[in-house]
Amino acid sequence: MAECDSVSVASTEGQINAAVRCSIILPAGDDLSKLSKYLLCMSQMSLPADYELIVVNNKRLELDENRLKVSLPTLKVLNPDRVLSQEQSFDRAAMRASGKYLLLVRGFIEFDKLLLEEAVRDLETSGERVSVSANEHFVLVERFHYASLGGFGDLFCSLGLPTGQVHVVANQDFENKNGTVLLVVCLFENNFGDILIYETIDKKLKDAGFETQIVEVSQSLTQSKLVEKANKSDFLYFAGGGIIERWAPQIVKNFDLLHKHIRAPYGVVGLSTGEFDYTAFNNSLKLFSEKAAFFYTRDEESVETFRKAGACKLPIAGVDIAFANDTLARLKRTGNIVTASFRNVPYIDIGGDLDWDMWSDALRKIGVEYLIWDCSNAQEKLGITISENDILEDISKSYIIVAMRFHIILAASMMGVLTIPIAYCPKVKRLAKQLGIEDYCLEPDDHDKLESTFRRLRSNEKTVRKNLEARGPELRSRANEIIWDSIRIMEKSMHER
Image (cartoon, rainbow, N blue to C red; front, side, top):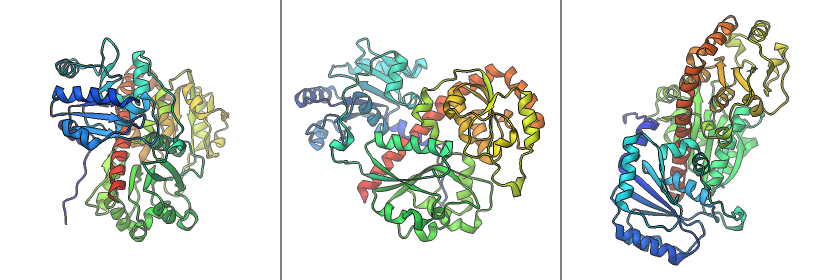
């Protein structure tokens, strides 16, 4: 048997960065003669071997990539399916860039190779992550930092620079060249987290020029017509969520038989497993991992489930992809109240139900003003007012949230809201550890510890906030890297069909 392997996101990042030092990104514009002259100057410049040049054909010029590569061997030409704004051009190229640093070239302005090298060295030694030329035509930015901010728009906003937006022609005006992706998602309960995952991936794929369709994972295979829809698509994309022992989706439980009928390539991001006995469908888990074009779990522990199932091509341990959600990246805490978010306990026969009366008393003692709405009505038992406002709005108004929901905790951390997680399942503990708040994580029967934990969190607020501010951008960047890598691999799989 081949040796099993598992690679961390950090290690793959290191391998990519070691090969390419700087990716120079240039939107092609709408004048072929100007572009040609500029590329001629760049070919005469003799760029270092560890540089790459990415030209985004954002106005759909007639470019001959093979001819251009004669004088610029490291050149990549991206041909989007529609006219792109400058912001979209840079983001599209960043998804495919391999360099540790990105040089964003905003116009056909000559630059000095030696000055660029000096600027790269300055960033490497100074600890800074971005520098801007005096004329604002060149922005040099660490790719990790670009991803953590969420792309061009947020980067330029943080620098106080104009983005140079142009009119974007509707997607339907041109034939889609990138293909159709069938998203396997869970939306049937109107669950905040599942919707957040779906919206994150759907937007990223559409921004990358793909047409997306969805299939509901909770439905039976007959109801969803998954195989039929998958085989009419160019790629099958599993977006997030958890697999648990008794409610594992049929497509996963029966993958040992199902994979023979699915002709489209597929990949998986953001999946996690629980602490259950999966041996009944180990062969399906093994094949599910081994046949995927890409497979990212949202924590290290979930990789072990597939190792125990006997998979030799293991998933890569990553983070939840909702960290890459563009809306979350822009929201900040605006209020100063104490709230809570409770849900039903899914495995009462295993761990027992919550003592709702005791939790109600504990929440009132720390001054919880209202509960954030949940798709489960279980928290009505707490006897505390349930808000009817938008969930993200209620999170932003909070100072501290006592939360059971995984994605409430995630969203709160991104907005700068402190949380006291209640670990009703392993994924909550794992998230708390990634966020560095595991010391404030409570068990479902720890209602008697809530008040002391609340006081301790308030007394350590500065330290906790500093920690969250440091980890947040890293987690967001890792989530963006996962999505960008998945898009690169997906495009390669499509082209090889």
